[in-house]
Length: 332
Image (cartoon, rainbow, N blue to C red; front, side, top):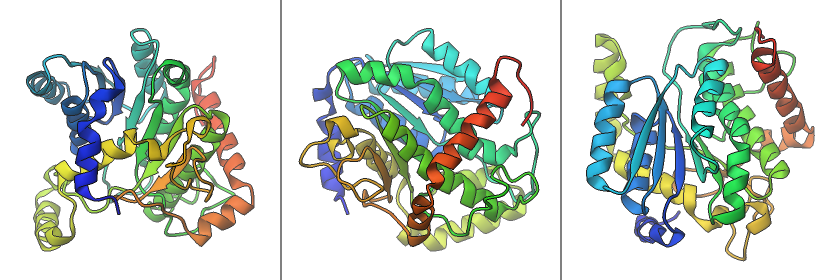
């Protein structure tokens, strides 16, 4: 476990990275994304942030807050419904028109639901799209900017916050869960696919590192979006679990540490202090992390890696992107 004192000491020294770091927070207007963005603003010099989400009113308040925390910072809101991949492309294009390089993409977009499959106009389940496809479409689209940052700056990194562990087996004959959708299968696929997306992209882009991080138990205020009965139940549950929870501010501090510490460096820049990568190789450029900075792994994931499933999953992902976002556009 990385001690919180070490986390704060590291974050306080981020000004040494120089001015003008650029970060994109996908889902950054609430919860862990907002908490991490706030720490990024607090600890860096003249940063430029892009908050991508749907809530313009909340984003305006956040921009005003960030300006008070760090008057040299600049916050831009990009409004988009990220459940649609074509909207992801529009958001990326808007950012790319302003930024030749990007140092950090931090992704937390998603939503809670107890319902079954909710198909979007693009033929994907809404929850699955937000938790997996939309996130890694951002990473793929903005690779040129990440690569540009890697040539001149000490930071080029992608972080997706979900869960590197999968609790059930993947449905290998229905990767997009067209006919085998359940909340359990959706969670397994979003988590497992993110694991291997990080590894595949790290292998192909050795100057950028890719992290899939588990947040632990954090009270993000999500219960406020529930109906009355669920909200009361969730509030009682969170109160009972408070001794085991990570405070929201600390979660932001820890995620900023993971997003910037050289222990999780890209493969081409890994030094002696590099952590073990997701594949057990020191400094491999792909890292599966727990809330406290420790490496995560499982026998189930090792078995899938031995089958070469990562390449299959990423090929499937690119196929989905091409069918929906290709020149003709369409539905998967």
